[in-house]
Image 1 (cartoon, helix red, strand yellow):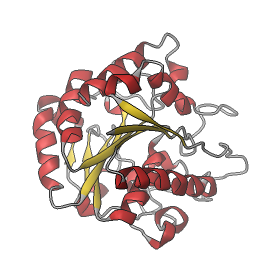
Image 2 (image 1 turned 30 degrees about the vertical axis):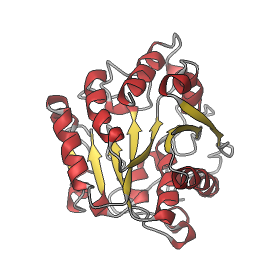
Image 3 (image 1 turned 45 degrees about the horizontal axis):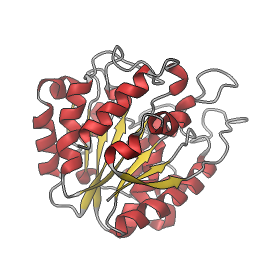
Length: 291
């Protein structure tokens, strides 16, 4: 049985302009408005309401902004996700942004050894070791779930790291990604967007083979894996991405695997999609991948 849970957090994104709140918290509503639940035959798992987005007073060097709120929210999402997985339900978590992955990562660590398929146009591997400072957890999410960063986010309940480097795969980054060298040094396999565009099914097969030894895995999808011409309604649209057909071909085998226990979708911003075109296309691709 599939269950759809809303996780409308924008806590880990920088503000698009001073005093403006990131709009990705509206993703869940935009997808639901296109009949998503009925189209995939899912039950409604409700919503985990996030704390207020507030970066007032934060300055570079202070660590991750909204960290205290994010930690509380992570535990709440973990409780819900772990409960559904224990019931044998496949979880679809509608974001939100990339720090939403912390909730499933923590929840699954309570249950056993799980991995992550990190599908993203960026590596999200920024740390104090490779950058002057950290701040927006959405740009640090893969680093955080693999134990790199401040303990109030990476070691909740004393369970960090939530995923091991050997149990992670990174798919979809662009050729000029700033931190890919650190990802490769950690031993995390990488399929760039250019390789996925050529053979999305091969990337899926390689990913499944790499994670076959685990109790299961979670799929994280940042929709900025899509090319900027296909999906401009994100905070960091970039050229060199894939199209919807390639995304469906990549996601389909991953989500169909009996070891896949769920996935989250993030970063789509309905504020940048006034006529709803991109929401409709995204929803169609998610439905097709789950068919």
